[in-house]
Length: 101
Length: 511
Image (cartoon, rainbow over all chains, first blue to last red; front, side, top):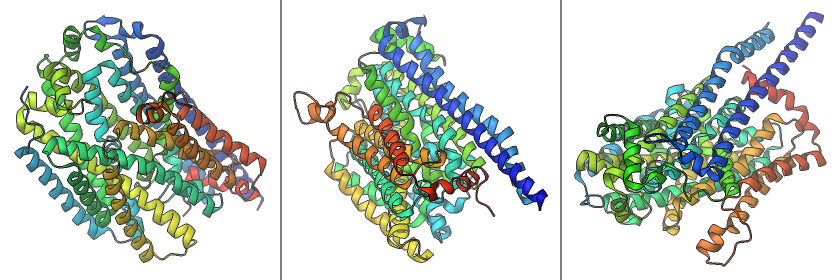
């Protein structure tokens, strides 16, 4: 009985630490997206001349940054999917197995 | 410029009928497989990651994004791109905060998740109220858009067009449920991506496949200002308010959230968001090319001559680079786009009415499968009639504004309660109800007091609330109210169930 109680407790601790890890990365990525987007909007509001600067013919700073914001959303999504596919799923599986045993 | 847009176009008519025939065929096959409530709401939970990704993209890319953004870019250059970007940045939020927990905690509606450890009845009534408010405004936007679009493209009267859209959509949802709706969305997403992609290629072919040469040509003809921000964003606080409403609104749209129940597990839900974002991101990059292409190839005056709002820029561009046949194809794609979005909205609304209100509130969870399916189908018919009615009553309303409204309510009413119920232990039933009701009411009242209604529509000299979008006030307020009400009157039962909630949130349902 002691052994099963002990494994239950460690199981609970593993779930808690997994919850914290997932929460932390979710908040960090959401904050990153919000920050990128808000800075972009502030530049549109206050940095009109800067965004209108032409880097090479046809490419203004504004268009380049706009494409970068779209690509950054994709990058943040890939970061999360990669983390979850490699780390999160493993830990979920081991907690499930731990309980089954 | 001579254009065939607005006159009956043979290819458009053929494309239109081929799409309707094909989608009704899909519905017929789906209907035979739709036997119980789970099939009706979630296609049996057997949709793959790629399928759900495309269907999410199909649900999200409305006619507003295809025609509206291409038109905005064609007429005002860079400013139009601000919308493309705003509609994409909500997806990382959906992925990180919502998609997987929602899949693990709920069955058919987002209210399942909010009510998971709280008292069922009050939370379900409030959630259904918030959800239906979002769906109503979104439906109005789509129906009004559909009526205008079909009138412009095919020359049909507005009311006829609204009735046709309502009836075809009703057939999909009523008989084929989520399976038919999913496939209509997948077909639509593929058609829209390939149509927009082909159009972009035909434009770029004139510039030796160098988009910068296209942009440079636009700047040479219409002035360097088209590559820089203009007048659209004059007030930064208003812009940020709209921005956060778009960002967090995506995570509160009932028809988007419902799609996560159609996949078998959390991992599939996660990967489907990556596919959806890739498809939507690529599509918005196409809109850069389509908008500037229409600006230089069709010309701003020719676009304005057909429709002052610029909504016909993409179809006119298709005619200019691909002739009448391509115009017809793009027109049929635009029609398919509206049908798919309307079908998704109706299904989400039917789930709120039947699963949340009828089964869990009126019948207290004691409705058998046959009754549930019957009520779901009756709700679908009711919503189809209501949406046709709303479409006709709200004729002439500004579509983009209605969509903005739907996003603001989704972000203020649904998103805070959903997030707090999943991640904040002290959250209570009273807190959830207060957050949803205050969020919805604040969003609606502030919109009514905003310059858009008071000055533009009611012609008052001033508006009580200075911002066009309420998000920056109503979203934080909804969070604060939910938190304060919960702390004032703790609910022991809800806090006790938090450990079980957390367990199922990560591990999924126990077998």
